[in-house]
Image 1 (cartoon, rainbow, N blue to C red):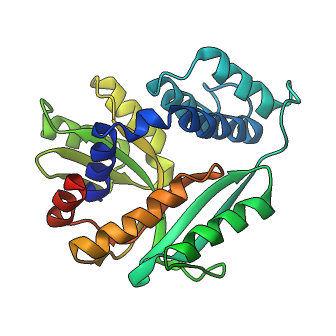
Image 2 (tube, rainbow, N blue to C red; image 1 turned 30 degrees about the vertical axis):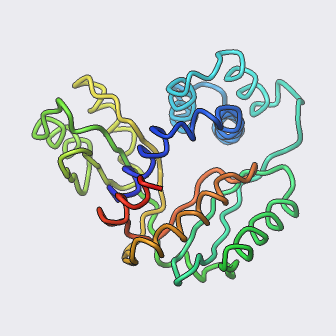
Length: 251
């Protein structure tokens, strides 16, 4: 998975994330709204909401935006249409499997937009269950290895219930069962570690390796999907090699 984390870092360096700040706020607000609707508006009790709020704060989302999203979720505010979560399954070129997480107020628009992007880039939308069997929902953390004591992080993660902790010289990644997410978060917080990324992800059981040009083609599909207003996250079983990363960074 480290290739995906490095690709996110490359995009941040290029300023792509800053250019999409408004879209990021919209996605974060939707996450907060859905979390508050499902588990209530108290982040001390509703851990999913706490996670969504922490992510919003890390992106410098204004406090009033966060509060407005919570009220929308709890029903205190009737602003906006009802939101629903949908997970679409599909394929990018070269048979790469995709899980496309959507939060939308218009299911018909969302599926039409996803299908259009996949078709335009040589992919296709799949039936329910056609791709999901290749992925497992997993608690995931990524943090910079620079200045970090790996052994300390490793022990904290394991004490919290982690199944695997990896380090490639630049990034430390932690993988764990979904139910261990809160305990690992608490353990990391106790040693003063703030992850660059933390959340529940769809992790592929096996990855597909492609050449640099083919990898770039698939990543362009994923970026186009991520640009859609209703898409929250896109997961794939693509392995991004060091060679492909160098190629991606150069273009």
